[in-house]
Length: 397
Image 1 (cartoon, rainbow, N blue to C red):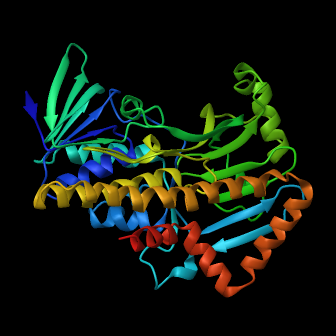
Image 2: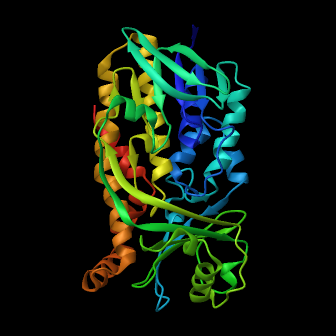
Image 3: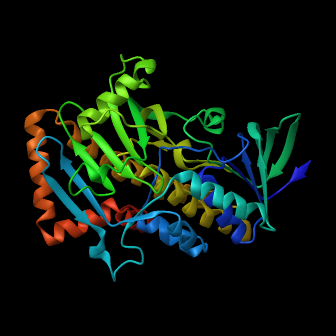
């Protein structure tokens, strides 16, 4: 039976970065991915400052920054009035190395890191190989990988599940995935039309509040992405139709003749696994927590999971296995997922929805109060940039 020290399942940004950090620590890593390559996924496109610091430690930040757009400013906008509450991460200049968000599609990072792993002496990348089963032993994990033509068995010390919200590893473990799924669907449209030509003072990251159809406008190097909610009773065929596309752009910029590069529907969940560590198997990223996209926390928090877990795996491989190290991983990352990532994304969604109307006016005033108070504004910037969640996690010993 083939062997390695760590198997990482899933070659998205979370899995690739986790695998690369472990390889850079000097450990043998096998990265397995069910698909033939790193999937082109439109969901995540924001890299927060602490994540850029982690990538910088791996020597990757500069290359990613060259391929993305720096976005220090982000807006909360009232669609009907054009009123803007502006936040500017440039205030962290001199305090933090990367005082901005980076706007870049997640698949750019995943493909870049996978290529580096493919050339790394301590790593092996196996596309078109998915974990279909595993069994924990006294000193490791025996994993069954389904390839194009056969089932291959590999023995490892540890298995890291970065295989997404439908994680088969989480399902085999029987872990409860507590939470809920939003009743509405989410529709993402992308276009090369420059929205700044139609909307004054438009930031690269704009959360647009509206009682009828709130939206998120995000700029990445190649396109503008527009995220809108849709009633669950609206058929997918309609949501992907020109009629719906025309309505969105007519209401947004007064034009219907807009060409789109992508039209994607997906469901959004707020769920957290009841436990992140299970013997020698640990869950990271969407495999253990999912949230709505308002704030750009999902991918980033998953990378933070993998970064934290890599430290615990290093301890176990160099000083001898100790379950307490993985218990600490769970104790540090799971509460923060509940108290920050879940709470903040739900709060961001409520701000955009106008529901109920009287609460929206109160929440909007709170945003103005934060923006106009130097101390509150700095704390808000650090919380939204995910510095605070990392600091809170690291307090747990």
